[in-house]
Image 1 (cartoon, rainbow, N blue to C red):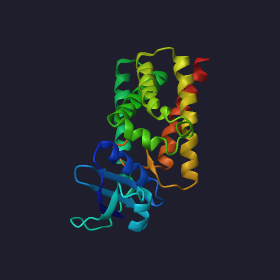
Image 2: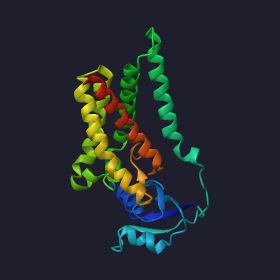
Image 3: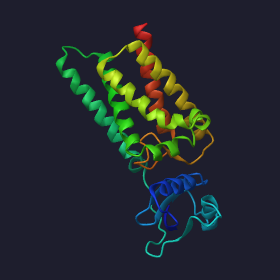
Image 4: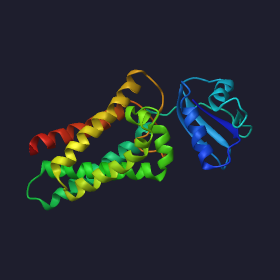
Length: 239
């Protein structure tokens, strides 16, 4: 179900990010869209959550106040699995198509080249979405990543690591080093994802930054696992 609320007290984009981050930590909320301009928060949840609980998450100091939005009544709007994950499915299809088209210049299908182009497209695309709202991504990522929790700066650096890996795969820079870094980084990243999914926590996945409201699920595990498998296979082949 999806409920829309009025939020008062937000004065800047930093407030917007803070409110969104706090609301996403409430058990039962699967996605949150907060608008500073409209002073609204649209929350997707598994079951109805009392406003008092949402207010508690925002703080009791009176800086941020949440209340029922008089112009938008709460309404149930369940989304299908495809509707929920449509952005990431389209992105994977797009990257796969581009990687296959690049094979047309070859006389035979080059598996290594296909995977290299696919991983270049993956990292460049996903880092792009993260950098559209780097602070929003960092605030979501630090909620579940084991390294970012201990070292918050890693949440900001991670987007640039993905960008660097994307460029490295694109230009075929030091394949062994590139695949080794990818294998290690993605293996560490999947730890927090696995823990979140196995603990059945309902928080937002930060794989596409703060642009899309994607819940953490087995789709995220498959996404990270695919990168681990590809980089591991390429590393094994090269060694």
